[in-house]
Length: 292
Image 1 (spheres, rainbow, N blue to C red):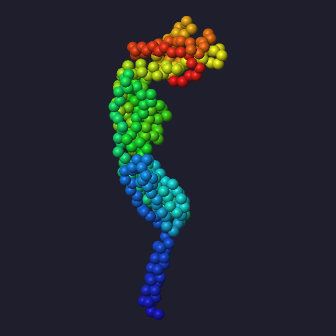
Image 2 (tube, rainbow, N blue to C red):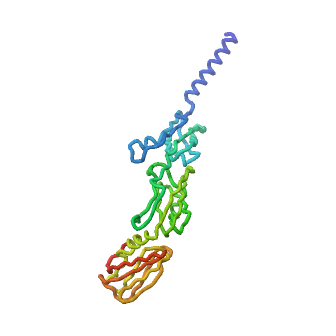
């Protein structure tokens, strides 16, 4: 056999081995993923639009990590991974397989429009909601508030548990008259302002709701406790059993009296609460159960 024929045979063998190795080499499919703007969570195609699979070939998955979990998180299985969209942006998913190699899948995701239901609220005697929440129009999607700051905590406060929250809505506590701005920042760095205007008359409606049925008589009438959840620092005067009791609402918004004299169900009382130059008087009767 000539040297030329031998060289051709060797080259052919190398090529065949290479093709065989390539056929059995590890790989992933697809190598890139794109998420469009998702629908609302309540819609039927929400899961399909926010979750995609990446399959591995000729190997199995050891671990998978996202370079930015604010964009996408990963769920690992043996022969594939699930990439779950979290927000707009780009990231890389690194898939480490048992063949000792790392494979990269690039992820891009369109940002959900950051639109609030409202950007201005007024509180007065006709607009005093029992619970107040600011929500996005895309509630239930992938917009999550990272930080909420009030420009004046004497007007409105946000519960500290919601300063870093995985939520697309949050409660606001109105604590005083005036105006303030709530600045809302999302995990992907976008922000919007919400304007709050609080009129003094708002508190009359609020106090009326707080004072209603907030007095109770313990069994057998041995001790009556009067408790109000109201505005911190407000002056409260209660007249009952021919006596007058004066106190201020504590910082946590509560007020409790220990009245020694026997007070039975149906006993009349009168409460006057005042602050901010606003005064409200409430008349009621002692009941057995309490609830504001």
